[in-house]
Image (cartoon, rainbow, N blue to C red; front, side):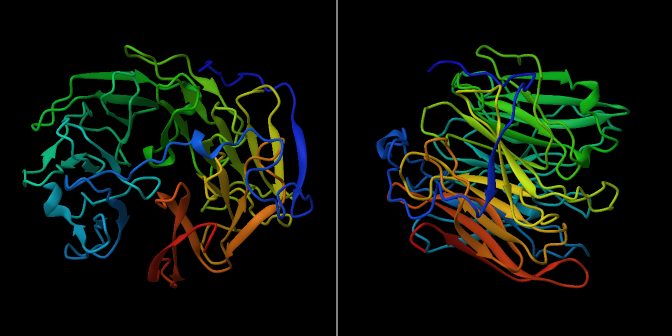
Length: 420
């Protein structure tokens, strides 16, 4: 596959039109005429197999463990076949006390990968990370040996990907020492004692260092088209400038590349040409402290296509100050080989009137500008993408009510796809 790169300077912007007014996606049967989408082009991915029985299992973070006086969280594992669900608590990871919660990842999905190469997926959680080893035989949880300084500010558990292209999953985390943020990567394979094959530490660009580690989020994805996973670092809600760290075969990272500013980021192939595209949400909604001014404009999603990095396409949506682009999630909902994009919209960050708008991929220009469907009207968050088992993918969404204290109540999850 030809290597594609994200342009450092975006020389032009193409505005496609307001979502809901164009007709590029309305009522078109798959595959879309004239597109490059091919159902056979996407290889269905099985969910990670945590218990080693050959069937994929669904893993996500939940709340509900308040034995320490605060909600320290749990991780739910719904095993293949749907007959059994386990809720992993602090004890399952060797964590104890209020300061070591289970979960806490920026995406609500913990890092899951076969770290020790035994064929079963392992689960990583905690800001000072620990591993719950997978497989049919119980093994004691293990602390990971991240080289954090005693005074380092560490907020989120690590993310997983193969950043050096050797076929072994790696773990990447961020720490803040004083005024500088540092990227820490543990390269696999790992021993059951938590030792990685090697450790890499590099300083983040000065402009990317926030005041607190909690402002930073890492996303792992194959974003450059060379088959090696990359990292994107950004500050959700801060309307800051994300930057891309390209992974390199043999180790190390390429030079950081600046991306357009925004709230949220997703990677997919929306036009079916085999090159990764980036969708960057830019909602205009202020952060939780209300310190960022709200632009009197529609929210938008800026799409940087792999075939033309220099001319991103802007999709505007909703009403002015409606918060279109507050979150984005990629999934091939109709199984046509082109990814679709679920876009979260809300006028604030209090989870009271969220909706999801799904834009179908595969039109002549990639993502269409008219909504394929809308979901919600009350708090609804797209947690992650799951395989439907028939060549399509589905969205796992969380719904519920938000109490006066800001906590979710009557929480429920459901899977949403093109047939539901």
